Length: 385
Image 1 (cartoon, rainbow, N blue to C red):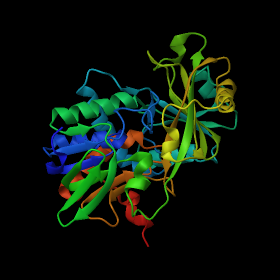
Image 2 (image 1 turned 45 degrees about the vertical axis):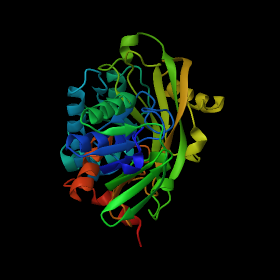
Image 3 (image 1 turned 90 degrees about the vertical axis):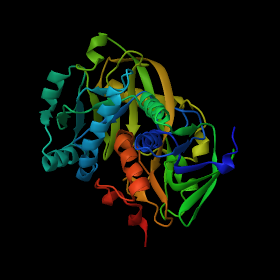
Image 4 (image 1 turned 45 degrees about the horizontal axis):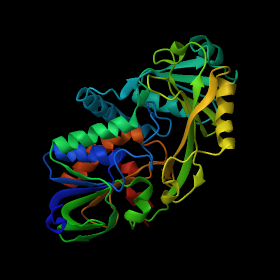
């Protein structure tokens, strides 16, 4: 390895996972000299971007202000998909089920109305007619959008990293950031393998963001999240894309369980709970930790209730992490204290679908000092004062 103390870059990206890989891709594509630093291999199972599938949806129940970001994210995901032969982006339709008085149904409807998004409303009987494997309570309503689908996160991250390197980015794996500091006109970064200098630092460190991005003035809680896969029973084609949507059921308002169609190579029917779990340190989830039996049985019970007769034996179980902001919304923008530093963190369990557009936003902040995308509601400054 060359003497890293003499290496200089336009931008250093700390953390090459979901958002970091997209940021490296964008920066390198714009001609910047980029260094990406990742403490693990790429992709890896120690953060938030593994598990075979991540939902993407347009009628965003969390807040209508996310919709313009999603419109751009879809375009960028399509561009990446067109550049690679390995398919990772599927449009399957999405069905979100809950009480009209809950969060997901009225929230999705609000975003759809505000942004004129195509959608349809289904009652319990219409849901069962369209998707015979589903059985839900009569007091539930369904919101369906054709544009929803899912991404295979490991493949997407790998595609972004390949693209970044093809455009000249340096991506250092298994290198841990130790410290950084800002000076007039530049940033200096130290790792366990050397020292680097750049005009700008982008921090996309996921669950490690609190430890790396000091001065954020808010608490990020890292939680352990469980997901499991079960053998699909019955005719396999009924679970295939086109016959089986991405789904979310508001089982524990304002949270719920979700799952996906089954494609070739999947371990089976996936089910997971979207709700912050047990608070842990990020180091507490080093490796693919199999959840205890009681957590697996809780997930199986959801499939048995809403998809009776569809779930066979357990085929796989795993855990990942949410990095939760105090209000559940992302933290994206210039660092509130340090010049020449930008950050994206606190994705709160719903961030992967935005990786493509966040990479573009962070590259603009690093190179131009501003972005045209509407991210004011996500600003780190909202926690200041």
